[in-house]
Amino acid sequence: MIGKIRGKLVEIENNIGLIETESGVFYQVYLLPRLLTSSTLNSLIEIYTYLEVREDALNLYGFATKDEYHIFKNLLTVSGIGAKTAFSIISFLTIDEIIKAIKENNVDTLAVVPRLGKKTAAKIIIELSQKLKKDFNFDNLYLSEEDKAVIDTLITLGYKASEAKKIFAKIPKNLSLEEKIKWALKNK
Image 1 (tube, rainbow, N blue to C red):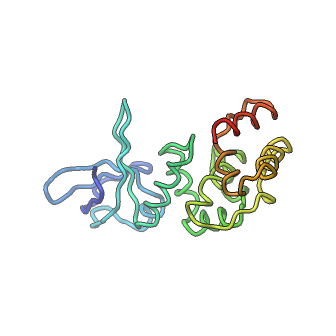
Image 2 (image 1 turned 60 degrees about the horizontal axis):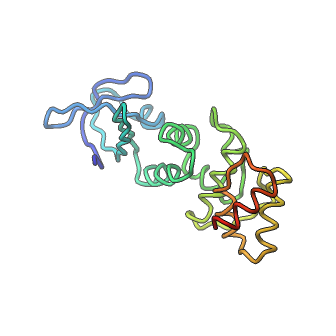
């Protein structure tokens, strides 16, 4: 794992920077727009990195702060969120905006990210609210009446709101209301 890189930013193409280390190794790294605008060519930069290992590629993502890195890794724990989507979220929103959106259950803030719909934004809020130890309130979430019924049923059956939220996030979306509740009870 490549955890941190310090070197000279020698090339920039779109959001990819080429960083030359003292040992003469060049790393191609996806960099956040904030990092690109604050850095100039041939300047020394030090970044935290995340290495995505895929069958067809090795992608390196760079972050100016440890907080950006940790939020990125938390976003990756949300089912259906890959490195490119997590990186897009951090590229379009600041860490404070992301945390505030999760704390306030503000789906609209997250939904401004291109190709991130309201349902995915709600899923991020549901799954990360506990990890970020924020108060959780279903009232502000963009949920269908059927989804609210599933959550209400689980709470009525004795689950705590946090447990109901965890279970709800894992339920396959293509099931009927009755099937969702049965799935939740079997797979808690």
